[in-house]
Image (cartoon, rainbow, N blue to C red):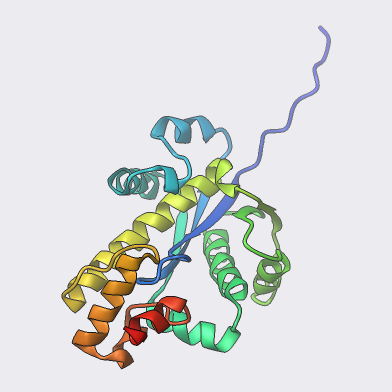
Length: 219
């Protein structure tokens, strides 16, 4: 019988993505997801794809399934902490790299995995350096439209679901509904928040370096 060469199995990988980067209110959330070998078909059956193409309710439902069945990590940077870090770093890509590196690192502590894929948001050296600073090495790939990779798409769903949850509870704590994004409705909500709670409280609910802050205070 003719001997056939064995094809090595595709190794597992970590995917990471963020949510809340373009939202004035609420946190910045970075999630990591470990995709084991031979599980891509299962994710497709679950409906895993870019979270921006999924309704909020469906995003929450899929996230619950992913959380029950797969190793994952979520790093949520609340508005106050976000504003402190942004003031210190003055560079959103470095802040994002810190979050992505933390998510990767947290999964590496659970799984023997040295391969990661992220959505491309800046110079990948930011992520590598953040990992190396904490003694971690990983084969890192940054992809434009990274959500086309199932591991990154799953991470995007986990990050979005956590963002939605945090935004809801933030609004409940302050007695008002915080819209998503950075639209005129968001500017109106920011102005109303300042009217109710004062401008000094804005940093507790919003990313104050956005131009929305100046528009809200000006109005």
